[in-house]
Image (spheres, rainbow, N blue to C red):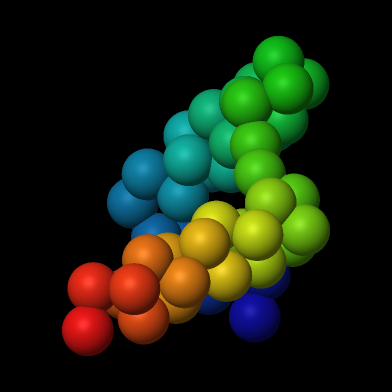
Length: 48
């Protein structure tokens, strides 16, 4: 499967770019995503 993934045009560049973003602290944790989803659900409930 790794060979197939790396054969995809741009895959290596995308992986390296992702590594750079993580190293720079440009990422969201699962906790961040859960909190954002919960906030969105609360806002939607308040709008109805």
